[in-house]
Image (tube, rainbow, N blue to C red; front, top):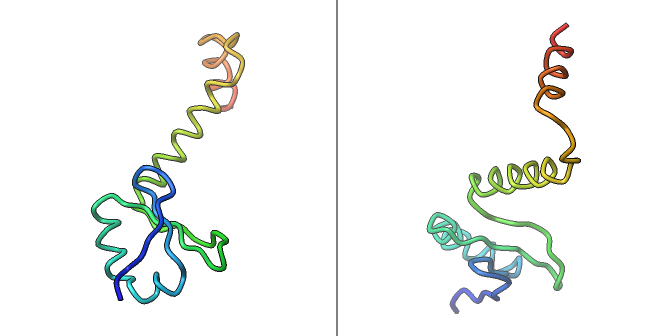
Length: 88
């Protein structure tokens, strides 16, 4: 029996919980090579295995997008004033 995975997106795959347990070492090797896996049980997502750096990058991208969505009417002088105010 070989590892059977589904394809979710580019380089993101799905694997059932039983197979994830059985082929855990193989999954880890594939994660080292850049793949990400969503582990499912009864068709429901229960966990994700991916490189830690990718998680940090996703958090940074989410933070950046939040900053971009903040009103662009804020000036650098206002930001500088907020920084100085926070140091009191």
